[in-house]
Picture 1 (spheres, rainbow, N blue to C red):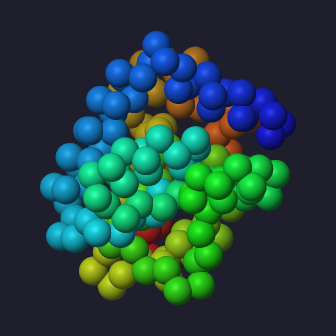
Picture 2 (cartoon, rainbow, N blue to C red):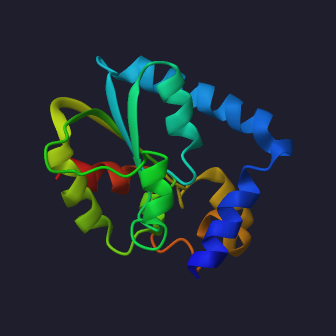
Length: 166
């Protein structure tokens, strides 16, 4: 399973899609700058191959990544890239979860793990498919956001906000 996921992630970042990925990163950064009063330190949970982190570091943002799928199997690769870190004393201005919450075994444990890492005035950004979106209603059982078995959870915008506010 891990090998399948690694190959899938590698496929996303093929050179033919490089321009699209750079454009997406620029859009993500614009969102973060708009909603965060401070963007000095950032943790990207579900960081994949680390492209987003690398781009932020180029812009002098102290960005770190954590990829739960790679935390044990490929830890050496990510230590070399500086993407794994010890969470003991870390406090971040921003924690991002760009389409990763729906992949974890326990979203409540994941949020509980991340909560102490955010500064008191920090920002948690969660992006995930919305099963109550127009596209989900239109495509019904064929909606790509269901993506079973990789998507273990499905959220609505209101449901996710209510959960995070608890």
